[in-house]
Amino acid sequence: MTYCVGLKIDRGLVFMSDTRTNAGIDSISTFRKMHLWEKPGERVVVLMSAGNLATTQAVVSLLDERMKAVKDRTPTLLATLSMFQTARLVGDTVKEVIASSTPEGERADSYFNASFILGGQIRGSEPRLFMIYPEGNFIESTDDTPFFQVGETKYGKPIIIRAYDRAMSFAETVKLLMISFDSTLKSNLSVGLPLDLLFYEKDSFRVALNKRIGHDDPYYRTVSDGWSNALKLAFKSLPDFPD
Image (cartoon, rainbow, N blue to C red; front, side):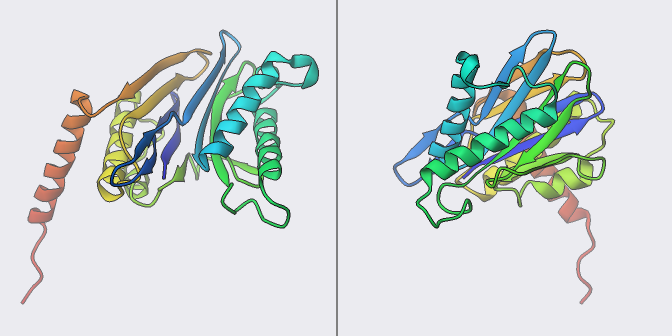
């Protein structure tokens, strides 16, 4: 399983993903689910994935390979004219990979499915955030829907809905996502550390922070323990049910 979140604030875009792809009694696998492409001064593109690992790796590999053979594929990920065109390119690649992997008669929502969160900025336009579905179609974030999740979403969503504010600082946004991921990690063993965190500041056309957060990260431990204690105190402060 997977948990990834892409969130839009006034200052830019914040991305966080876990790295666990398999969790059994004697088998735990870790793979990066966040991928970054940059052309300094012109664009930053971030892609996070959830679903069948072979499918997601094939999509990323194709996007990479076609940037090395530009004559065979135009435009490439670093040559699209807008983030909308970038989303279309990724969506078409998803459809291509799933079609080549899926036996005839099966649908995209079968074993080979994969979903993606795409975000970034190309010079001349605003930062944009998209959710790309296994069928290759996609939607864009709005003021009403300022964040997207893929994977195991239900445990971490309530805190984001309750506490999100588009005027939040980067530090506040990371704290919010840490709590969201900590709630998910404690509820589902198929989502696990380490976490990947990336912050893109609007109009900078460079990544401000790209960091991996492990079990021993002091800030993560502080937030995790502090949130648990705060929930216990909040619970105790509520009135008991009247007899």
